[in-house]
Image 1 (tube, rainbow, N blue to C red):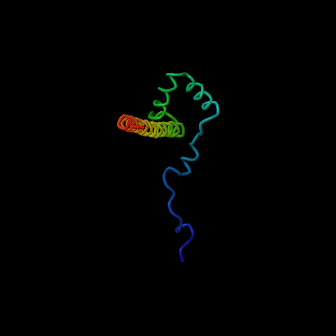
Image 2 (cartoon, rainbow, N blue to C red; image 1 turned 120 degrees about the horizontal axis):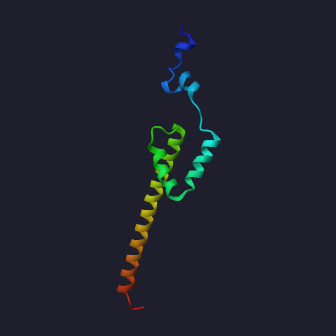
Image 3 (spheres, rainbow, N blue to C red; image 1 turned 180 degrees about the horizontal axis):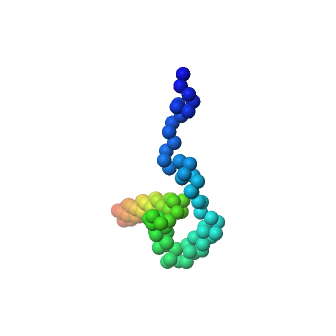
Length: 103
């Protein structure tokens, strides 16, 4: 009969005890500074891209800003789709109303 230790799956390298011991979460102070920087109109927009794609950024912060960019892309796509639907509806309405003036 095998021992219990040999039956458990191996631990992925990213969850090793060394990685857990050296991981430092983003502090409240860092998040407050981040939020203050984001309040500056043009600088905040630029910093979202910098923090999303910089290897020097903390992994949690980088993932957060990447998710913001994905969310913005989804909203932009939905907005374009909605605008296209309204334009097509407006064109169809204009064509329909100009073609039937016998009311």
